[in-house]
Length: 166
Image 1 (cartoon, rainbow, N blue to C red):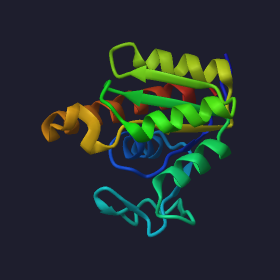
Image 2: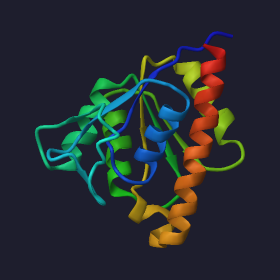
Image 3: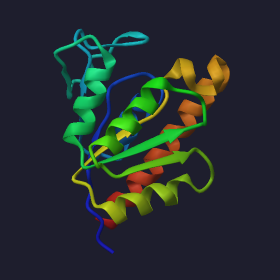
Image 4: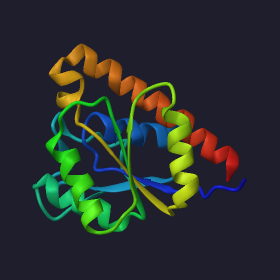
């Protein structure tokens, strides 16, 4: 079954966004995204190794979130279930603009559900979003680090599977 290999778009935030970006890099899938003005996230300046990110016109993260949803054909949210106002805003905006949205909790079935969603929707551009590092693990940095690493592994495996099917 041929599955299109989408461009991966994230907002450059810590946590799920950068886990998805690193997964795309590891799987050799094109990636980009709009980031806030100043190329900053909650950890400070986004490292230069993420040169494909484009600086947006505003410091307001909601402007970046909406720009990334607007340019995408579908939105995939990966989460550990932690509360995340930014992620909730992305999901609501995607629904308001009639974009397909899939929210997946990181677990042993996440890879197959990601591949199934992309195969079903066939997006040319896939926005991957989720909680920032400080929101993961309900704010516990040790848990957040583990969740971020797990998210990157899940996404890398899913992207490699999509590459194999493309």
